[in-house]
Image (cartoon, rainbow, N blue to C red; front, side, top):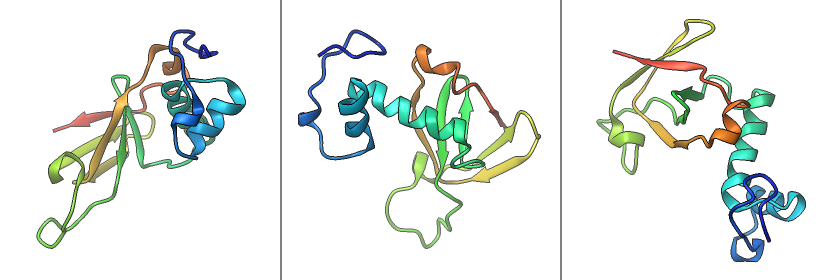
Length: 121
């Protein structure tokens, strides 16, 4: 089947485990990539994860929360590098050492997830 959004990718939902993305693939006729971004676009529009999701230059980032690097075990976003992020509208600054890059937002979703932040030094 062809995706109803990008009209390029063919996808069989049965290839994927049960998830929100698979549900969108089945109900809306989307490929996995468009289902992934549709899910994030809806969350962004509804204000879910407000203060935790940053769109910078068309890329989506998620703050997993500041972690004590001296005692943390396991994975941290960007290997625990320190980041400062300013919200464009409010000027509020977030500092984190657990930032996760979730990808370059496809052009056909950028209108629904416009830049809301910038990295500062």
